[in-house]
Length: 434
Image (tube, rainbow, N blue to C red; front, side, top):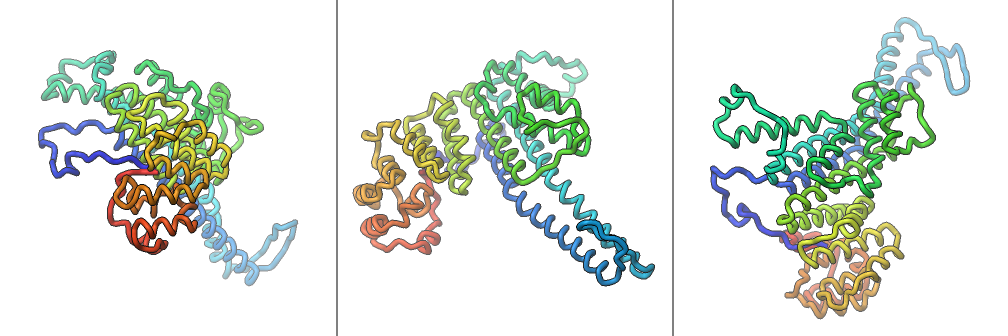
């Protein structure tokens, strides 16, 4: 379920003054972070499939060439040893090198995705800390950093000096370990960030594994084990120094979800504490992120964020946002096949005084399609529910397949509903979300 977007000055045709500094935007930084993490997650299966296919092709080509031009001298299980004449040795060597390169790529490339996930998180954290300092400059005033007279003479204004200090503070934070970064954030902004954060041990393990990939070719070190044990990480049966870690698809999915969850939750907790006057923008941002995850059928990731939105966050810019979070949370449980939990979310709330938009979506999630269709007719074509909402919102995906929906849609809009009609009618931007 989406909320109505507020228009920026630029969207209204008004450009900000040329001499006006750009205000830090946690919303923009957070949206970019999510897009980058989602891009990595979407690319991983495609890239690894290509790498595995190329490796299989080179191994097959080598096997066929040896079978044709070589002579078997030994067999042991599935292993076969060939000898070839001098005229074929050069070609065999090239094919064997390509095969070995494919095998190495099959190990290195999945690891590189973990490195990229953490790199994106680190980059986002730097932007977030910078934005928080600019939002609350009094926090920066308490910094211990000093400037020499020579440094001061290089700045044209106090603002330039402030920006310099901000950059140095950000650099200092990013040089810390990821656990130390949370220590710093909690101390600097006087807030608990890890209480109830179940993803924390996984986050530490992923970041420490990234360090192994970068610095020791994935070989387990005593430091990795010490840090993971200290933070309560589940190492699945135990590891010992000298073992080599890699990345399989299941591990990557867990890592991707963890990094995205940590980044979004961290940003929203800090943003809402330090800038309560921006709570509406924060609600809009969290709603848009979770809605897009649902729209892309990433229901598990959306569920995690919406559990956070409804069970951890306690203050909202409006009652409407709180109810939107509840509706979207219920639908994530429903699409995950957890119908009882979806209904429990709905039943815990009194919807009787809600608008027809909420009543309609609640009826749909309860599979009360006849009641939902009646509300469609009541709202009509000029009410708070626009035609494209019915056609595109994921909350209506099963309702759209029903006869009550088809009849109500035709009665309200004067045309029969079809998938082709829905796909074609997307020129007007959606301004409100379920």
